[in-house]
Image (tube, rainbow, N blue to C red; front, side, top):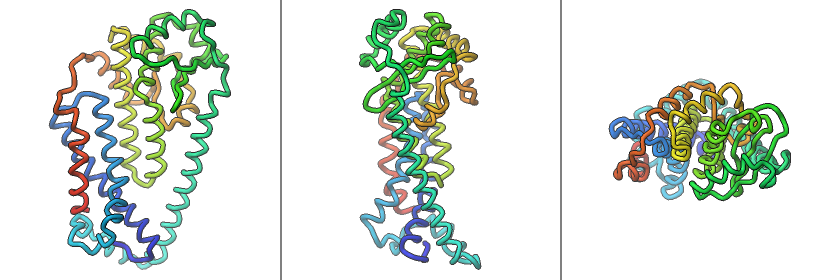
Amino acid sequence: MFNTGSLIQSVNIYLVENILHTVVVLVVVLALVKLLRVRDAALRAILFLVPVVIPLISAPSFYLFFPQRQKLPVLAADRLLNVEKWLSSWPLWSVLSPLLTSIVLAIFAFLLVKGLVSLWSLLRLPSHFRALPEGEEPRLDALLAGLLGQTGVSRPRILVAEEERSLCCAFGLHRSYLLLSRGLMEHLDDASLKGILAHEVAHIKRRDGWLNFLLLTFRNVLFFNPLVHFLCDAVLQESEMATDRLAISLVGKPAGYAQCLLDVGHRCREDEAIFRLQGTRACFVSKNQGFKRRLTSIMDYSQRPVPYYQRWLPWATAAPMFPVLFFLC
């Protein structure tokens, strides 16, 4: 594809093929979601991860097991686009190619360090808040005990922020933490507080802390691929709706949960710094365009199980993608 040096060649091949692979897999996933009418948000979130994960490992795997792949009679899409010939026709490409590759590597190194710093900050986050011992807030303990009993989730470590600003979020990897502000606990009635707690317990049950960590990693490693950022946002939206679904099953009233979402909207503004550390902008209440979609999903809530054939859809989609991508691009 590119012939300006081994390192530069490898980087350029990966950049181009990663984007091409993402496009191909994304088209397939969107077609399947549309044709099979996949409505389950948790399943859609997994499906939208497929166009991120498969291109991430496909090209390195191909060249690891087939070092001479460039000389094989494959790469039909590459030859159709003729990227190498098109770029090599630029008068200054021989100079720009090493420069651009160096810039890409420098950005990757910067984001890698930034990601490690963010992870370290997240691990240190609990030390900035006071741990709330069990029994100090009986009302909170009673609401939380019922939700934990329904889900089978171990009690997270409760942290309290001594401030009037409304603040509530769950985070953590190996150990789960639930952060609440004093203002939130004092100004919300039992129904609204239970709705918020149900949402955060649902996040813990679904292990969304690990999902946020993976999305942060994908954004940093594949920063050059604009589709990856779009897909990560889509996964976050679907994840929030899947969390809403689980929370509704805990509180039992979709209309009441939707009202809680609206009531808390003018008060509950999670600390954006915490969500940046987790690699997500998702929160109990958000101002983005997905908010109306969440409300619609809540009001359309039903307990219909996911069709059996759809449960294996992510694996059935991912498996044939490797041979397809190997021969296509």
